[in-house]
Length: 243
Image (cartoon, rainbow, N blue to C red; front, side, top):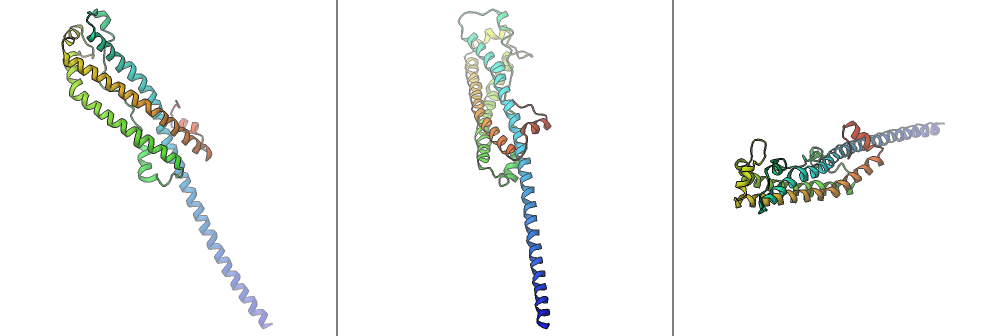
């Protein structure tokens, strides 16, 4: 009887130890699961924010290409052809086409979410393909475009703005009298010719971003859908019209 009682007490202590160990293990597993859930939620929030920015970039990219051609390249090419022509051109044919905008049609580059990704979320996103595409677009494509834009802006400040001050009126139109003077201004002709090339180069670089944006959007959409997130709903909440 005594031995039976001892065995019972021992088994009770063993059972108690087993229960304590099981409780600790379950608690640790729950904490790990909860932490993983939070990290996954943070990852999806970050991808969603990045997706919104990239879609906005895509819209601005396509609009910018159209505006670049319409408001900058074509008017300047027309002016260049007029200045290169040996035949005089009637004023009425010049007035409307020779309204030239000053500046450029650049993307605003919505990179707020990417800055968060760089400084806080690189390890959070697990999809390595997505991270590669993010770096290709932001670090390669957009940074190279920024260098080009800085060079174009520098040329504009040094050469184009003085040309505008000298030859255009308050509406940024080239009056017929100014046009006649520009025909004899070799430096002005060179500036316009080079200026056209900078816009064409900028347009080509913007076009090179299109496949990068497309692939990045597609990869993010796959990741969101795989985790039960609807990309269309994300854009709807953010009031972004998907291009």
